[in-house]
Amino acid sequence: MKLLFLCTSLEPGRDGVGDYVRLLAEACVENGHDCQLVAVNDEHIARGGIEQQRGRSVDLRCMRLSPSERWDERFAAVQSLVHAFNPDWLSWNIVPYGFHPKGLIPPELAGFGRLGRDRSVHVMLHELWIGLSRGEPLKNIAWGALQKRRLMHFLRALNPTVTHTSNATYEAVLAREGCHSQVLPLFGNISITEIVPQVPRPGEWIGGIFGTVHPQFPPVPCFDVLLEGAKASGRRLRMLGIGRMGTYGEQMFAALNEEYGEDLQATVVGEKTPAEVSRLLQTLDFGIATHPWALIGKSGAVAAMIDHGLPVVVPRDDWELRTRPIEVPSIDKLVFKLSEMPPELMAGRLARKSTPSARLPGIAYAFIESLVSSAASLQYNA
Image 1 (cartoon, rainbow, N blue to C red):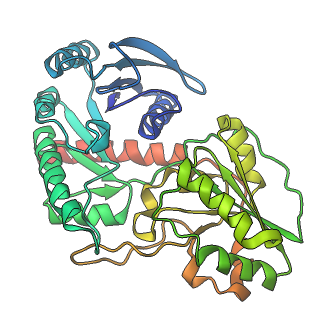
Image 2 (tube, one colour):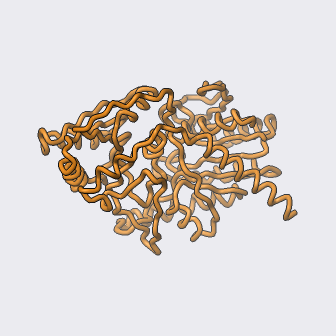
Image 3 (cartoon, one colour):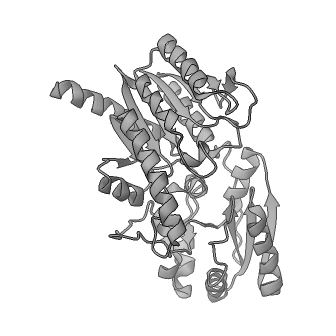
């Protein structure tokens, strides 16, 4: 099967969705499929062109198009590629903010729907629009309505055969807009290059946060509860900040050292190579998610922690749909709400760390199966 993956950027290590697309395409190639990639709005380049990007085991042919080029020029370039490659499926991975700094998908993009004529179209929606949760200011609700209008217009133009998203909350929101979707779990973008031998640390817990920490993440009561659990099990608590944590995250870690003193040692290790990140994740006893429970499925950092066998503590349960809230199930047996972990039971929950195991092959298989079964269903109905 021939697959053409489309996203906004393919700058390695600088665009999470681009990294996701590259890894998924590589897994599909390893399973015998022919894949090429397109970035339609890549702000990391000045002019568009074709390049080969090296994955873990294969080279992938990539077309990268720059925002400096007019949309009609970019459409013509992608149309030429589609005619030459003749894919069975176009697979769009959509993040509205990848097209516009305010999350407004350009109306011109609807013309790209013509690329899907006489072939099947898949869409993976990594983000929707703002203003969905309770307590949002009216400005966000109004702006989100405009974002929604642009996104739904684009989806109608694409007319996808299969639509995926990463979490049950977005699945419910899309259903209310008349768009049937299914949850396709995220896999981690950090490959497991080696298994690090585990060294017992009976008197210590090492937790970690991976990636950017936004101001919505409250350090209290999260670290108070974790410290209670550590003391209840006779352990000291250490925290590592891994990756680009952002200004707020770095300031929060500095404040933790001042606030808790010897009770909690917080260290920002910063950006590392993927192999180094993998080794660091394996040294942790648990991870802390910064996304709220309702949206935990859209966190690439949490996906990486699960791949690395880490129990993941979710402190935030403060996000709920503004209309008709839903019960959001856990995305994995390793993921827990902090509110459901009393200090005396915390040691048992955090002892569930398992051997690292990449979920990418299984998720890639599920992705391909969803396309194949959809195509078979269409042929049967015809």
